[in-house]
Amino acid sequence: LAKTTQPISMDSYEGQEVNITCSHNNIATNDYITWYQQFPSQGPRFIIQGYKTKVTNEVASLFIPADRKSSTLSLPRVSLSDTAVYYCLVGSTGGFKTIFGAGTRLFVKA
Amino acid sequence: GAGVSQTPSNKVTEKGKYVELRCDPISGHTALYWYRQSLGQGPEFLIYFQGTGAADDSGLPNDRFFAVRPEGSVSTLKIQRTERGDSAVYLCASSADSGANVLTFGAGSRLTVL
Image (cartoon, rainbow over all chains, first blue to last red; front, side):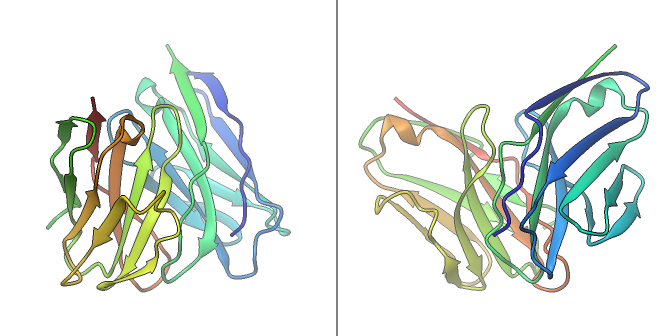
């Protein structure tokens, strides 16, 4: 299972774009990159998933360079409600032992 | 159901007691996961079911922990002879077996062992 490394915490202000980078140097050919968001007293919630290049949905964008050894979650114009822990995971499809790291604690200030 | 349901949401018990935590996954999801999360930590993998069978139980910390999923839907996590160190939030998640593996989590069961 590919191990991931991401910053422990980040601070931002409302309205700014936030980029959280995750390193996964030993990602396997059939691994996808998935990001989850977790608010206090809730389970993690799926944000976005990608394999290569760029993926965008209504919540975020995910940038994956050609070598796939890292990925960047981009949150446009964050608000106070985006304060949460963000987890980066890598793994193959079809069911597998999904391992979470410590995540990145994002704190958005007014 | 519409989402993953976990009961109870809160459980307080005494050291040495037996505890059961229940998870109702999303209807039709064949994969089911249990995690344990302590304050300030990421979710720690415990066990993963594919259908009725435990595909990977390597995360169970010791033989006091056991989980079942007899009909391939509802799952129960069982903890015997609880210890204070078992206090945590126990999260359940489910996913469809096809395509990219995206987990949907329940709100968790907070276990406090006094």
